[in-house]
Length: 533
Image 1: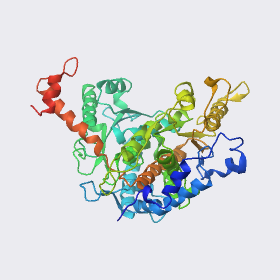
Image 2 (image 1 turned 90 degrees about the horizontal axis):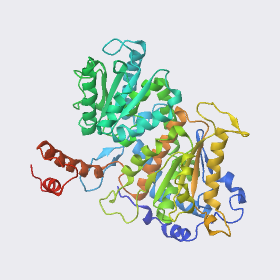
Image 3 (image 1 turned 135 degrees about the horizontal axis):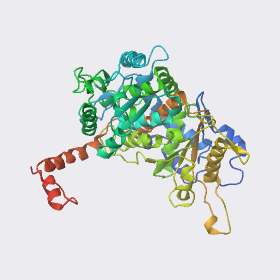
Image 4 (image 1 turned 90 degrees about the vertical axis):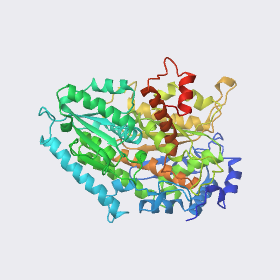
């Protein structure tokens, strides 16, 4: 298959020309003229995308649509969902795998896109359903016969960030009396702090590692299992594994159960697989987790639509390409106006930057355009009192993706000075989006806001399992579609390997009794770099 990137499309030079004089959002009445605010909305049953405050018009949108059509990026997304080998680089040694994270939630329509993968996922879900039933009815208990009330989730990277972000977002929907604690960092203080917060008799330990050999995760597992033994408990009665079939962790002598991860699901795309299912299913209940999968599946299906203005993932992806590659903005801020999503930007940092932080194309050649932007973010309104100064008046223009919900999760709110807290939250979200767009003139140069700072608002009714699943799948699809646009492999992560290899050298020096002391001395560094024992 011959791939082409966006620079080769017939409309590329036209878009570059349009980017030289993009629509001026500071012009008088521009946001209200021509029904713009109502017209520039991509509506779906779960989430709406408002993009009137992006620097686009019909000519730009038509150009982006033509670009998507010529690159066949939606067709590539469809092929990915149906089992095409997408994790590959032509004529270069690579993982050479299918990419089927969407199969983990392809259970709500028949036939599924890739029946074999969907069947494997469904079998794991059925196994999980039985396991959770045994935990709930007390058939499975800890060493002292006490029911499990707490999960300790051990994993790092994609085995931690996604499940942690989803758990934090859905705290109001958990089964009463249940909680999940995450240990990821190999820093011993992380494990020590978490272990000090739990009753080990009631803990179920979930170790997540596809290979069964992740250094940080296995180190933390040893720490937790040692704590269990020190408390007089049998780790076998408290531990389950989420791993690849036949990995070292797939061992019934050491674990209550093994749930399987599959090679065709990359870690950062794995939150809706067993990676997230065991801990989230324990907390939400099986049906609550399935509701999240249903929302994700609905967004996956919308991502197969050809029309830019009816496909939210395609729209979000191409607005990002317009801002990054044509207008030249190097970063994107994801700013959720929902406290539940306070860890969601951290998950997107990995999902996006590990996917699209690439410098070669799928045919093994050096890229000729910028690929993935830097992703960052924090919740509003806190951020308004921190870094928004730079967003409004700094020299670096940062496109923003706001995320908000019409209703709060808990529904506990009071009117203060005439309005509720939720109303104040949404008022701030809308105000920031408009302020970034239109700016402000003033005789005082210190009070001038240049405006023309683009943003999109992603708006839902309430942050619940279904809408969270849709939001997660929206961003996963956005990332994949952008990767197709740049003609890069969004599914490998060679960039994380070099540091691991070098760390092994440092550890050998430490084992040999050559610690770095108070600082990493030149002698120590030299020994590692020269490969000395």
